[in-house]
Every structure is written in C-alpha cells, then in structure tokens.
Length: 152
Image 1 (tube, one colour):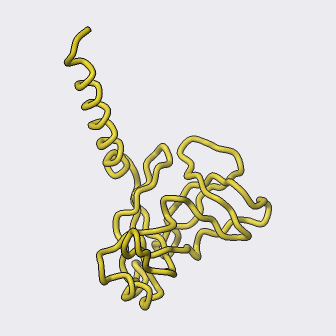
Image 2 (spheres, rainbow, N blue to C red; image 1 turned 30 degrees about the horizontal axis):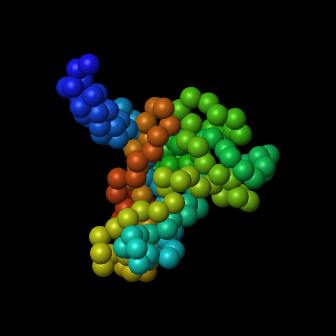
Image 3 (cartoon, rainbow, N blue to C red; image 1 turned 90 degrees about the vertical axis):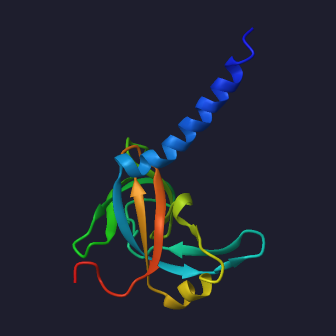
C-alpha cells in the first residue's frame, strides 16, 4: 500500500510514548517522601539505591498483597498515604503490601551517578521527590540527603 505510512505510525508511537513520560510532570502533583537506603551497587546496572519508605504504612485492616493507594502531603511536608484500598480505583498507584509497609515498583530503586551511591547510603535519611499523575503513574525525579524537615 503506502510505503511511508508504517514509518509515520512508528514515529507517532515513539513520540506519544515520550510525551506520556513527561505528561506525568505536566499534569501531576509533586510529593516528597522520606526514604531510607540499602544496597547501593549492582555490577551490571551501576550504582543505584534501593529505597524503603517509613511513611508508607498501611492500616491493619488490609491483608498482604496488591494494594492501590494515593498520596497526600502530611503536616510535616512529606507525603503520606491518602487513600488505600485492595481494589483498583482511578488515580491509584499500584503497590504491594508486606506486613505494614507498602512498596511500588517505580519507587523501589533509584539510579544515581557513579560514585554517589555510598554517600547516599551513609546519609541514611533521604528525601525522594516524585511526580504523580492524575491517572496514578509515578516518576521519581530527584533523590537527596535529608538535612531538616521541609516546613522548619
């Protein structure tokens, strides 16, 4: 048929994929989470920091497994759980509940520049800035050592 149609469709797909990545920041809200690092190096991927979030705690009524949650800003300026359910809802971030802690695939590891991983691990108190889209996609944008509370 038309030899030029397929390359145009492929190009549009790639452009839409890139736009969807940036749309998280354009249309979403930004939150800062308290984080704690562990295991900062992978020989294949380079330096990264695995993160756990002490403020992402679930109520006792939920059982372990998949959960869906939203974030809201807490009184100290750091994000906390806004709404959490075991069924999907619009705008929810999909995560997994283990005990009383929640993890989400996009939040578990953060790749850093070579040489900065051990310094972040030594800091022990980190802050992760992330963008959350209205449709529930998250995008970590910045990781830094936490010096003091943001509202102080």
